[in-house]
Each structure stands twice: as C-alpha cells, then as structure tokens.
Figure 1: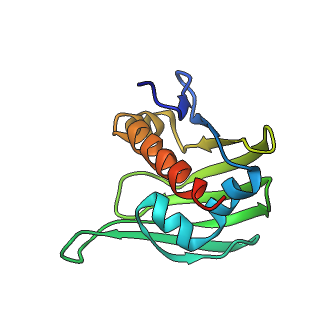
Figure 2: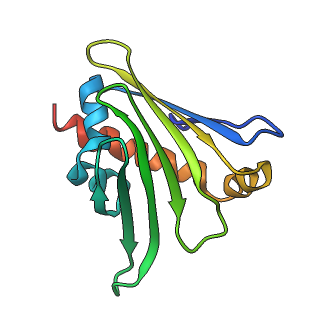
Length: 155
C-alpha cells in the first residue's frame, strides 16, 4: 500500500514538502497539533512543553522502557494562527542535525476533509539528504496514520 503522506524532495535543494490529506474537519486536524494530550497520542512521545503562541516554545521527549531518554526535540513557535498555520523551529537534541525551520499550513478541503502541508528548510542540502536516508518517510506516514485514527474518534 502506498503511503498517504507524500514527501517531495527536489535534488540540490535545502527543503522538503510534506503533504497529507485527512478525513478530518480542519478544526480537528489543527487541534491534533495544538493540544498536548492529542500530540502525545499520535506522536508517541511525551510533551514537556507546548506554548502555542508567537515566541512560545515546545519540547518533546521519548524514553525507553527503562526510563532512558532516547529522543528529545525542541523549538520556538514563531507564528501561530488557529486553523491556518504554525511556523516553528525544530531541533533534535544530541544529533548532528542542525535546527530546521518548519511552515505548517492547514487547509479545509470540505466540511469533513482537510490537508496539511509542511514546508521544511534545512541548513544545507547535505543535512537534508542525510535525514532522508533515515526511515523518516515511514515514520511520518505512521504518525499521520495514528493522527487520523486517534482524532477521527473525537468527531
């Protein structure tokens, strides 16, 4: 089965475009990015902080069964327009990846469907390409599938 989340990465560019249509009203799709409890469920990580406002910050953390932190990411929210867009930085701690800039745009398609477009800019083409060698595409598709499943129960 072909992944529903599409990743477009042009050669020799420092960006990727991620798109996904959801069988969710726009407000619910946005809510899945706005409310900590829902983010934790579909991302499978703990939300330590989520300040949804300009100049706010966020921090996520994932631990293994023994309580060891295996993933931590953080950033600053630069723009937050409910049901429209979130502009933020994204940094994975303790990795060779530099901070990236993400533009999340939320679009109403019909009363019951919506679309998310994530435009991500990287410091270099090499860093972007290094990230794309990881199981990044599979991971984001799985997370978006969980988002669809979890949030559709909130209707």
